[in-house]
Image (cartoon, rainbow, N blue to C red; front, top):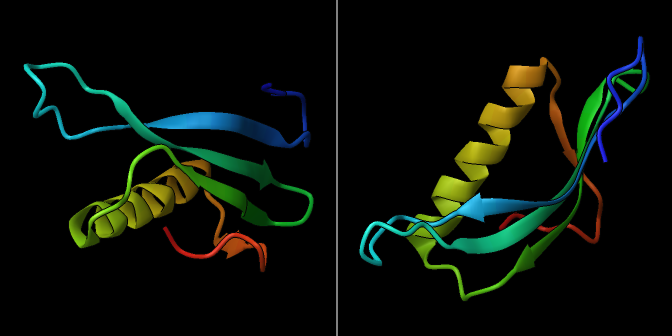
Length: 87
């Protein structure tokens, strides 16, 4: 669901992460991000991280970087719900 109205939150429900492309050029999703860019609250809030495959340390670092990149793109700092630990 996406809402782009003035001041309305931008939601990214079940946003898949793209894998590293090591499967013959295909880029399978490795997990899903439940997050919201809440401009009224002034935060990019990570509600949950759902892993479709076990994350390696390198994947964890890359995914954390991607979350930060997405938050910077929408111009908000990242906050995490207590139930949404780092990937």
